[in-house]
Amino acid sequence: ELEKHHGKARHLRLVGSRPFPGGISSTTWAWYRKHEPSRLQRADLVGHLNTYLHRHMTGARVTDPSQASFTGLYHTLKLNDWHSDLLAAVGAKSSQMPEVLDANVIAGTITPEAAGRFGLREGTPMMTGLLDGSAGVLLAGAAVGQLFNVCGSTDVLALCTDRPKPHPQLLTRALGVDGKFLMVGTLAAVASSLYWWREQAYPEVAVKDFPKRLHQLAACGADASGGVTFDPYMAGERTSIEQRTGALSGITLATDRDHILSAMLEGLIAASAARLPLMMASGTKILPTVAVSGGGDRLDKLMRRDWPGTWKFRSVTDATMRGLGTLVPQER
Image (cartoon, rainbow, N blue to C red; front, side, top):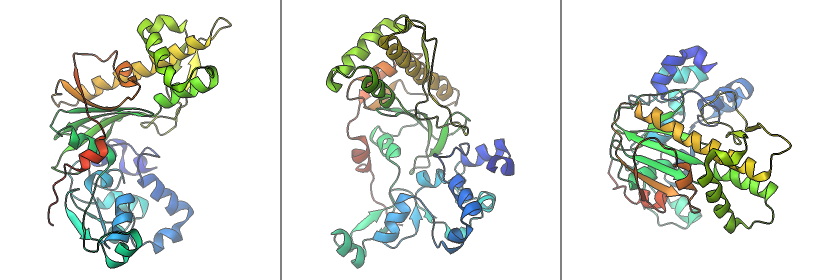
């Protein structure tokens, strides 16, 4: 309905992403408008988590560009505030929207009430803040062309750019500072898919020993799958309005648990590699060294096995917290 209102291509140009439920809040706002309009009519302020926290802790009505991008109501590609047509499509009023400040701006100070409630010092300055993925990119340096890959339960690949080129299979959003953007490709269930199969088919294999089996099968390539294939959408797909599901094909009476595990690995590895051509088509020159986080069981190395091109990798740890630590507070 939102794309019909704006036009699919125009919506993508304005917001940077298609209106995927679960990855944007304009769809939630539209749902409330349809099913609970009185709740929205009473709302004084609508936002995401950092808006909620600031309202309670500093009294400020703020958000940052990275969060604003995910509302689907912000002119992300121009970084120039809420877009009147996007607001009108969901029945939002500009008076309900928070002020958009860069993530490192001091948006307010801890109020006396919040100091008592949360055990903080009254008057402590509080920056606007930003999304966890953006914080990791900041730790990686946030250079134009930097790739940042977080591999764990979910696998996220983000390209930092100053010239975003939205693509329907990627999420394009503001970094949160410095006028930069991220183009993001997400695999919703990676380790979570594989360890689900461990629970079903390998109950005798301890969690700590399971990575060894994964690496053994991955070294054999697709031959180990016995012709079985896997659609890697156990937790849906972040770039599909009609949610996809996982599927196994090619199963016969000769299929065993290792065939299925191998097929799951190969499906996930292929999906990981498929994001690279999308990033390369953006027109941003990609730096050869990729910053990586997560992957405690070295799963990240398996997922990058079939990446096209030649890459170097450097590890960054505790990326979100340390990335936040790179923000230098700025006065309004």
